[in-house]
Length: 355
Image (cartoon, rainbow, N blue to C red; front, top):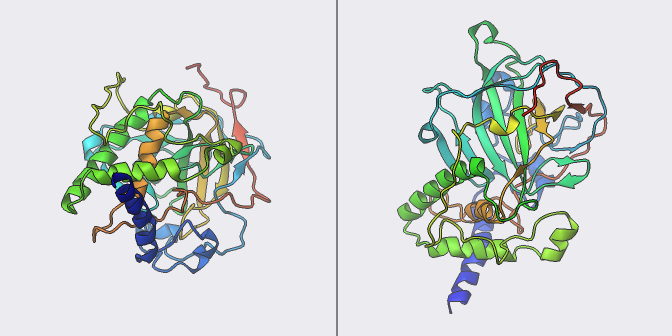
């Protein structure tokens, strides 16, 4: 009887989403060019970006994500220079969205910064977002997830108007295969925040913790493990993985150094190219800088990300995820013909120092 109820909730999660009003869906990304109401998006707040008009059907060649393969020389002469800022985790606005997990940085605290030498000056971090599986691929390999950080405004008054018509995105892959039983302390800090928000929304909607169990059941059933292994993806919900933090089991306490947003990008080498936003309105004004060193996470953490997305409740307390039937909120790889993709390593950096 319990299994029947869980299975019914899992089906309801997908079917209710299909009936709900949505701007776009990962079931049919080819139809994004017809998506309506895309003018109300995070990036539309910056007028010079021009992110109010749907550009998903444009044939300008500047689309994302792409498969990262070096076709051009490195355009940077130093590593990413990072400023930790002073924003606490409690000051970040953590949101579960139908298209991914997000953290919005307020202007009321000293935000973290990054400085790239590719004609960008020091910029504030505005948004951190988690996608599963990864949107970009690296030389044909897709990873289990991807964390993206958008930097929108310049940190120094002297550079206030520099390149405001462009988005500066940095990204790092998530790998749940190399150490499937070891939690990633950096990701864990954010996951706990998102789970806290999910519990608040569930309590507001009168939903019990059984929903989390149903979502995790959905995670375990969404694909045949053999087909995933063929694609280089981890079979999810592995039997020997630790229990999720949404269950009654006590959460693990990880010993961590002081957390800061940009720690995975410290002293890393990366790919870079000019592309676009990876969801409507697909504005072709984004410079991407993707680390070539993935973050290792546990199978348990990956399951929890999928569970949060599967159990997304909208303001009307209806299941409203935009994920496809496999739980994916990743746009398929786009045609990269003509894209100039560079890759920077220690030979390009004048200031390189070992970790």
